[in-house]
Image (cartoon, rainbow, N blue to C red; front, side, top):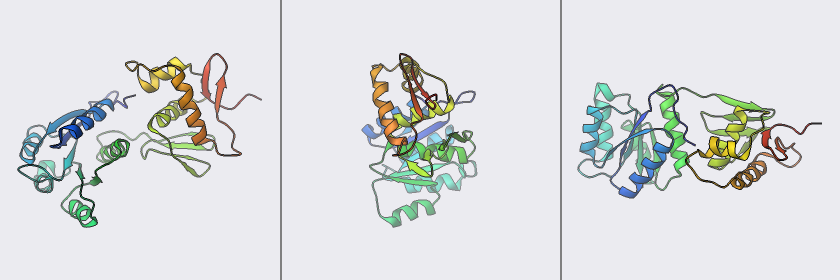
Amino acid sequence: MPEGFPGMAKPTILIVEDEAPLLTLLRYNLEKQGFRVEEATDGQEALLRVAENKPDLVLLDWMLPSLSGIEVCRQIRRRPATRDLPVIMVTARTEDQDAVRALDIGADDYITKPFAVEALLARIRALLRRSGTVPTKGTLTFLDLSMDQDAHRVVRNGRALHLGPTEYRLLEFFLMHPGRVFSREQMLDAVWGRDIHVEPRTVDVHIRRLRKAINAEGEVDIIRTVRSAGYALDLEEV
């Protein structure tokens, strides 16, 4: 389900990457989350695009033709109009000194290939919130469970929970509507999206995974199954 930005313009991400498969992958995932995406395949083109139409964030590869990502970042920081433009460096270089160098010349963050797309999306959202481009979401709670939507973290009874992307979105949906019963079809539309064809029974699989992730031994199951109706974030009626 795209995160979207209701009531506001879509934030623009400039991807500066010369590897076509990675560029395609990043564009797909960012657009799926509701971002507007621009592309550049070398350093000179990146600087031209930034000057012509300043994006909200630059996802900048270290190794680029014509002009390195490091030099692109340095020039972005030299210009008054882009001095505060959020920049995330993306690279296959893993040495600590390289990370330090990227941050020293002005990158706001640094991620090493290969990386999990969800981790990159979380960093992008965090930087955009910090820059004031997107509003903060805050924390959702139910009993002893809380979800920090900004940090993308879930905790129950002081215990950090590790959820897959679908389970996270499913729990977020439940937390936004506690006590309400949803059918499988309603959850598919809300969490997967109406344009995605998924069998209704797929919901049952993810509910089982979610239950396993959030309910430790001795803890009450906070996902209620309502026969012939669906599921709810709720306690069984006594």
